[in-house]
Image (cartoon, rainbow, N blue to C red; front, side, top):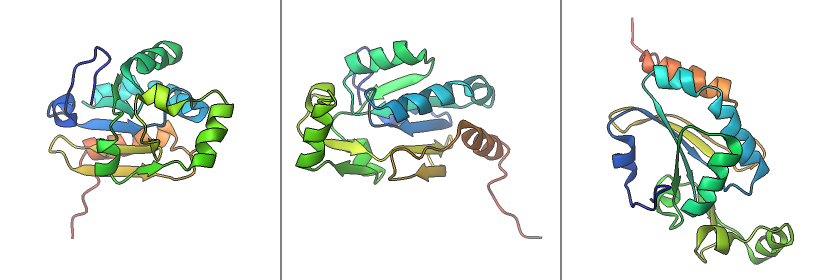
Length: 171
């Protein structure tokens, strides 16, 4: 992945051994993504207090990420993942067909320009909560790009995980 400053970084290095809320989004051009990113901004103080860091991951190039950061007034980390490796690793990547690519171009969305790649891949909008050991403790993945997990649900999951309430113990 690439930081806003253009530095290459692994997800493991970005997480730095801390629990992390990973948000895969399609790009700054997507109004549903921008609503979700803005909504998650509202719980950041609470998730920070629980020891989490929030990281948004998109195929957008760093210059595009900077525009999203400014437009949405985000204080959390955004990473560029234009090569689509993390999308594939998490099993959430898909490729757009030619008709959809042309439709997007009609809306002024040029995925090759925003990502710098020709793979026409996007992530299914997803949220993962990963603990400090690198284990996924919560996931929300919905192929309907309009359906997003509310920040209140993400916060509740983060609180439960922080208290280790996701583990069941027999009586």
